[in-house]
Length: 90
Image (cartoon, rainbow, N blue to C red):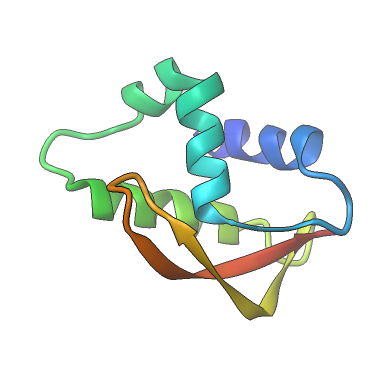
């Protein structure tokens, strides 16, 4: 999963763009659904799995992304709006 997330950020997110985990999760669901589904572990809630994905994104801090002070308000998989951490593509 980590390599796939890195690839999405490197190849799909434009330099200087600000994004949140929901953007990456939605991209995974739409374009890499087999990987998204196969990386899910039994017993994990959706919230826990998406938190895991967010932490994987954050692991690239300082290399290909930088966390911003700004937050987003975006739609999650349950069609609810939530406040989220954002990163900028370096």
